[in-house]
Amino acid sequence: AVDLDVQFGDLGTALSLTAERTLAQLTRTSQIDATTVKLFLTLYKNDLYVLAGATDPVDADSIGHAHVSVVLPLLAQNFEYVIVDTPAGLDERTLAAIECATDLLLVSSLDVTSIRSLRKELDALDHIGVKAERQLVLNRADSKVGLNPSDAEEAIGMKISCSIPSSREIPLSLNLGTPVVISEPKSAVAKQLQQLAQLYAPLEAKARKGRRR
Image (cartoon, rainbow, N blue to C red; front, side, top):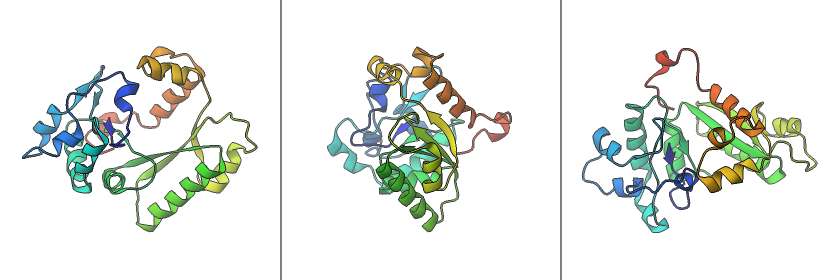
C-alpha cells in the first residue's frame, strides 16, 4: 500500500505504524531499483507492506511524477496487488499513479460538492484518455441528506459498486490503529469492505499475478 498523499497522508497512522523510511527519502537515493524500493517498505502484518509518503510536508516536494512512474511498476514486480491512496484532486503524482493503474477506485459521499467534484474528475480522465477499469464506492451511504444513492449514480454516470454505511467503528478502528475488518469483522461496515475487496479477488488470481494494480 502506497501513501501518495505525501504531505498529509495518514495511512501509517491508521495502521499504527511508524515508518523509518519514506518515499521522499527513496527519491534521494542514487539508484532506484526493485531491491532498493523493498528497503523503504514498512511491514504491517499478513504480508501487507506500506510505503509511507513523507514525515514532513516540506519533504514531499522531492517526490515528482517521474518517481511515482518508476516506483509503482517496481512494486508490481514483487506484489500481486499494489494499492495507492491518493489525495483529492489530480496533481502530477496522482496522474502518474493513474498512468500505472489497471483499476481506479472512486469514492463519493452523498453531498452535491463531492458528487460534482467526482463528475469533473471523471470528465478530466476521459479527456486525457484514461482506460483503467473504474469502480464507484459510496461513502456514508445511509446519510439522510436529501439525496438518494440513485441520484448520485445518475449525476456521476456510474453504478455504485459498494455502499459503505456510516459507522462509529471506523473512527474507533483509526484510533486503535487496526483496520475495522480485523477489529470488528462482523460489523456492517466491515462486511461491505470485504465485499469491496472481492471485486479485486477473482478466482483466476494466479493468472492475474504480476499485473499492476
